[in-house]
Amino acid sequence: MRLLLGSFWRAVAYCLHPRVMALSLLPLVLLVAGAFALGYLFWDQAVDAVLAWLQSWSLVEFVLGWLESVGLGGLRAVVAPLLVLVFVTPLIVVLSLLAVALLMTPAIVDLVAARRFPDLQRRRGGGFWGGVGWSLWSTVLALLMLLVSLPFWLIPPLVLVLPALIWGWLTYRVYTYDALAEHATVQERRALVARHRGPLLAMGVLIGLLSAAPSVLWASGAMFIALAPLLVPLAIWVYALIFAFASLWYAHYLLQALDEARRADAASLASALSDTPVPGPATAPSAPSAPAADTVIDVDARPLPPAGS
Image (cartoon, rainbow, N blue to C red; front, side, top):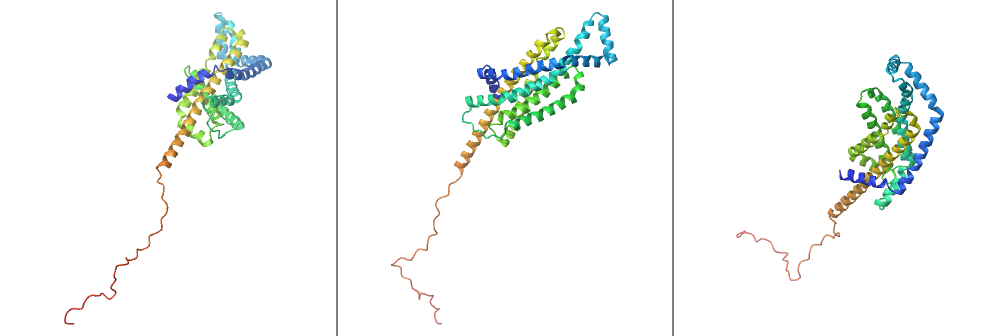
């Protein structure tokens, strides 16, 4: 708990560091530019496709007709754009997470290591391309879990819990690797993750819950759909801040855990060496001592025969 809370408050403080704020601009600009480009190219086609899909369901058409009968016919024009925003939200989350991991995390780890752990040896158990492969594979697994869990989203409480758990698991997978790739060996990384899996997963779930915050923007988009061009960049900015904080949190936690583990191993080794007895110099076996010079040895001394023999 000490390590968890200490790294949390340090991550909060580091979010205001000028270098971190400057680093967050690059993924933000790229994501917003990509979102506007995709919206310009595919928004109308996506809305039309979703509207056609809704009209193919007789139940949905019945509900929309009933809404028109009670004076809420304007919702027909809002439902399709709102669903498009809901459908692209997982894509925005994944791209934000990966953009921060690839563009910010290496610099964040260097910043934390330089300020707090300048003597921590870099053993380079991972690399940039290893991190890319690990992140992509973890993302594929998360998207598969997302698809499998879609039927459970119809249960009201689970629609908020399941995505948060999936995003939290993905955050845990990506940022634990990136935080230790430069400083830890593969064996050290696996040992640390196994030892601290509970807190690391809890951190990821909390980040997943925070990443659900922009969904409130889509609720307002139902009434103010015309503000979608403003709400989408705002949501991307929120995601970028959340995942930048996650990167800082994992970097502080894992680098401190790695430093403490190495110090404990060094102390154990030193203690073992100090308790080992040191053998003394080898001594040659001593030769039998010669008799003293004044000692008389009677070679003829033997027992006397019995009397009368």
